[in-house]
Amino acid sequence: REQSITPDGGLFAKNVSLRKVALAAGGAYVLAALIFFAAPPFRQGLRVSLTAWNRLFHVTAWNGQPWLRALSMRAETRRDPEGLVFAAARLSDASESARLAEEAVRLDPNLLWAYAVVAMRHPELAETHQWVPKLERWDPQNALFHLISAESIEIGHVSKSSKLPPKETQRELEEDTAWQKAMAAAFASPKFDDYLDRLKELDRRVAPRYGLGDPYEMLSGQEWDLPTYARDDSQRFAKSLLQLGQNLAARGNRKGAVAKYWAVARFGQVMDSQAHTGDEHSLGTALQAMAYKQLQVLSEEERNPREAAFFSYLAAKFDSVRGEHRLFLEERVFGRDVSRRNAAVLQISSLMMLIFSGLMVAAASILIVGSRRGGPLAAQRARPIATMVALTSAVGLLLSSATLYLTYRPYWYIFQRAILNGDWSQAHDLRDFLVATQELPGVAPGSKLFLDLPVYFWTGATLLCIIGLTLILLRHFRGRARANELQHSPRVL
Image 1: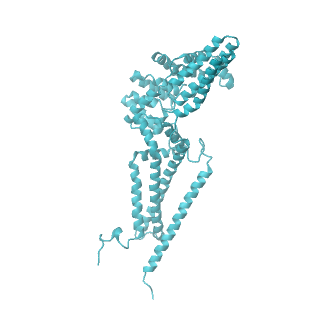
Image 2: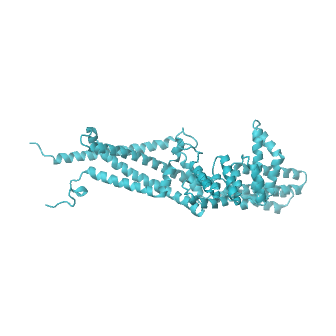
Image 3: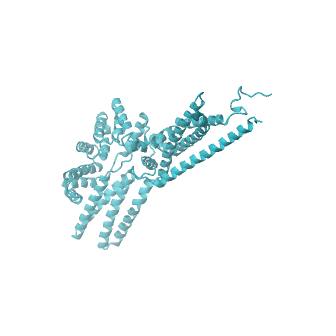
């Protein structure tokens, strides 16, 4: 008679129980799922998938920025000015951001441009009045500093006339001599630089130095380009110049009207040619289109068809470029809809990992209790069901882990290219994805109460189908096991 390869037969025995095979397979699936934790994309993707839950349950305040504050403390301890600038450019706390920027400039005066970056994000800072003169002496031709000064003046107007209607506040602002002087200086400047290129180079050096692992904090320094107030102030002042030009033309002062129109066009050219972001290009092309339309009208009134046709061509060209050029600069490989869908898949995968892990723990507890001698009879009877639940949960955990890894892997590579190589060409895809992960699937942006019922209905229906299929399989295998027991049991005569 042949003997088995192993003393007790083990898994190779002919009479091995189905429960042992199921438990062995389940253990293998769990080990395979745990291997994913060794992959950096998986670990980062898992943290990203939990962002919306952290905000929902207030695990971390949305503006707490604990990782960034820890980095700033480490940079202060090391007396690292670049690390301080990295944190100052991203902190939502305006006073702390200003303090870090001043400390960084004290340690390294070559980082004076950090004042401009912080002032763009926090124009309400009182330190802005001290920073702007220093920046103007350092880079005297940059229009950015005049835009910052104009916004500081506007903030003062808003705080003083908070009870006035918005139109009245705007009228007082436009009549303010200091605001007009600051905007006129900006429109007369031959240069525009927001220093985002310097910030990106600094990020490339600082991120590996401190082991950056939070894509939200990294992108928070890149998502700001030209502030909204700068666009609004520029368009408001441009319209006032164009209106002044129309008034001069109506009085027969063609030379004065042309000078006003070209002042707007030249500033638009400066913005368009020296901008780093799509919003800045959009503002530049919009200002040029506004100016060229007025020059076209003036040429038509003077019956100069050649100049009218030329300015008509320019106005139409920049109007069309205003949309197409912006899309070109902010090209997305995946698209916003795909990024939102991927974010939902990532969040659901992490949620399913949690559910399957809980089911496995419950099943393992039943199996352990039921395997003991003298254990509860209910636990012993539930062992077949617990075995099947453990196996299906292990399979679900493996599939959920693989889905999470494959979903986030492309975004992880985008993040790594941005850190190591400074390649931000696909940053918009990553930003769209991260923004989508800050809200739960099916929840309206900014809302915690109103759910998209179809999403949760079909999610629940899918889970019920999975549970029903599992119960059917359990009954099937239990029926086969009982049939085998009856078949091999000795007959009683």
